[in-house]
Image (cartoon, rainbow, N blue to C red; front, side):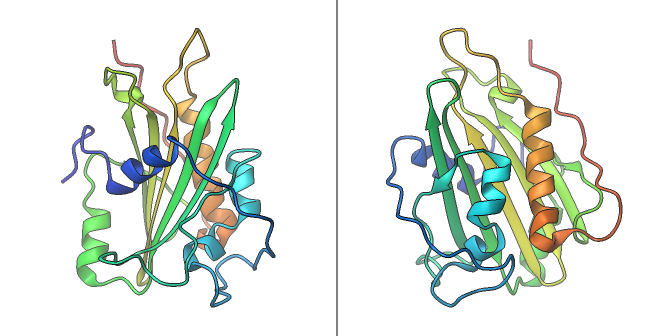
Length: 203
C-alpha cells in the first residue's frame, strides 16, 4: 500500500534527471509498442513523438537501452526538458513485460491511486510532492500506473516546484496528458477515457 508521501522509485529517478542531463541526437522513431531490438521497449512504447505531446519540446535523456538496468524488472525510458517559464520537467517510463502475478498485484494495490477508465485492464493516477503540500520546494509529481494483460506500465511526470511567482503546475492537465499518452501508445481499451480530478491544493 502506498501513501501519498511514498514517492515511487521512478519519481526519484525522474527528479534526479531534473538535476541535469544530456540530450542525444535525433533517432528514427519506431512504431508505438514495437521494439527495434536496439532501444528500450519502454521508449518504443512511449516514443519521442508521444512524449512531446505530453510536454512540448521534451527530449530523450538516457535510459534507452534494450537491456533492463541491473536489478530492475522493468525496461526504462526517460525524457526531459528545461525552460525559463516551466523550469525542469521529466517524464519517465517503466514497462514490465512480461509481468508476474506479483507485479500485477502490486500495480493494482496502490490504494491511494484514483481510478482511470479507458486504459488497459486497470489504471490509476497518483499525485505527490507539491500537490500534497510537501514543503521544501518539493517537485510536482503525477504518476500513471496501468496493467494490460501480462504487462505493467508506470509513468511519472515530474516538474520543478513553482518559483519566483511562476504559476503552480496544473495537476489536471498533467494527468490528462499522461492518460492520453497511454492511449496513443496503444493501451486504450475501447472505452471512453475518464481521468479523475487532481486533489484540491493542500492548505
